Amino acid sequence: MGQLGHIDRKTMLYQTKVEYGDWAMNHVQGCSHGCNYPCYAFLMARRFGRVKTYDEWLRPSIVDNTLDLLRKELPKHKDEIERVQLCFTTDPFMVGYPEVGKMSINAIKLINEYGIPCVVLTKGILPIELAELSDINQYGITLVSLDEGFREEMEPGAASLADRLAALKTLSDTGCKTWVSMEPYPTPNVHEQELQPILEAVSFTNQIVFGRVHYDRRASAYEDLNAFYRGAAKQVRTFCEENGIDCHIKKGTAD
Image (cartoon, rainbow, N blue to C red; front, side, top):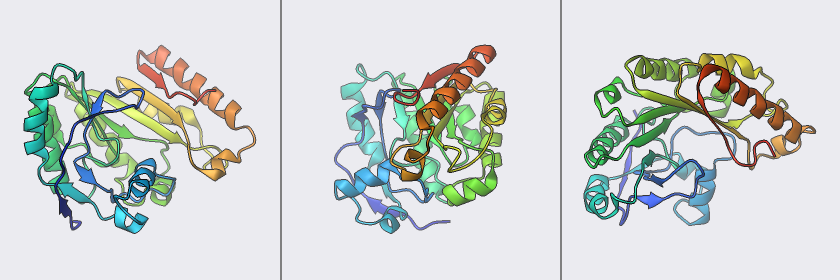
């Protein structure tokens, strides 16, 4: 179990510019998963002076006044919000930090009281308690490979791929809406693999979001970069169409 830091903030909810997002909240600063592909959240946190180093980023701090902020902000913005994403710059079910998961569940409950759905994304393990919450929510995992060795190399602090998938499938089996983020999907020079088995492993989900690698010089150096992602995006679209799954290809992925 990790040692959490504690901070307060002045605001919590914000409108996101992410193409498949609406509003979002990030009730933790930092993330212990230690992803070894360039982390956009860390890059932005460093740019704006929230943290100085990646080691500092790996020591997360929970926002203690999260629920107080939500109680103030939800009445003001409830008519503007279609859904709230947890989270874009941290992980709501971070491995080894049960206090983060508890706060996430309480935040989801509070947001749902206003009839607003939450969209959850984690590299941790989605708890079965989520099945007891409103059926307007959608729960997802990040999954870009089925190779546990690659996961240990690229996401050393995250949950195992098998455990992630099992938790997602359990929620799906209870009737929860589920989704998978396949981003950043690695180029063959970063990790050689077949896409089809990954798609088949998540064929029970309601939605697949697929996106390319960014900010990684290794991927950028791949000779057939654009052709590779065009082909992969087409394969994802075809699979989703054949299986009745909602498909979202991130902008720029197939261009």
